[in-house]
Image (tube, rainbow, N blue to C red; front, side, top):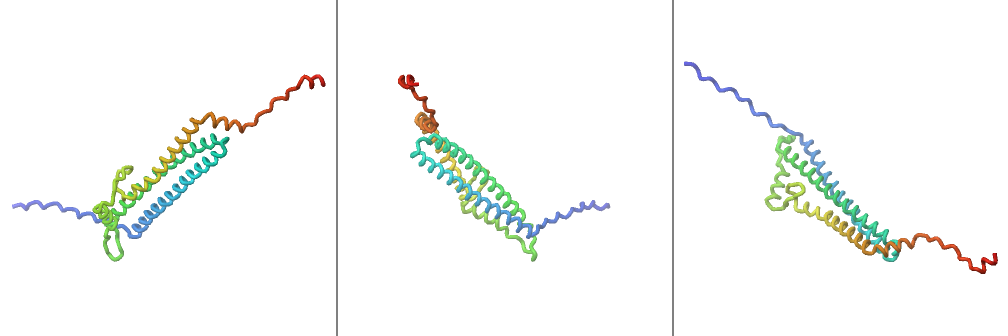
Length: 212
């Protein structure tokens, strides 16, 4: 009898890669820096928007008592309103970029966690994944349509501030433009009163002409 052919030897499963805990720790620190930059960005843009609105209000108040400059002030306010709306659009885009970057970083951290090599041979508890699962279970997440992913509920509210500012700036620009158009004649006359007018030549009387 011939012996049955032996089954081919199977290759051992590839060894799981291990990653350095120091690399994991350093990469986590980059996520904290992204969060800090996002907070600074929100504070800075909020201050700029509030300053623009305050400048528009003060300029309008000053123009009420200086009607000759009202047309110039209203034109400036329209320009500031449009610039403020553009700034808010950029602000919203920046928040979305920071959210996407943070999301990518935490996904990489979650992928690294099971393979992190500790000095004493311990294994990772995978705290970020467990934390996210707990937030899902307790309904603390909401859909963020701009990025098509789940985020914390407060992250959706974060977008409300620049969106509210953008609406205010757009409405202000439209309002000042409508008022300027409705009162164009009066504002134009007030502006022209500032222009120096040449005095007409003196009229010589007949007696003065004979005297010469």
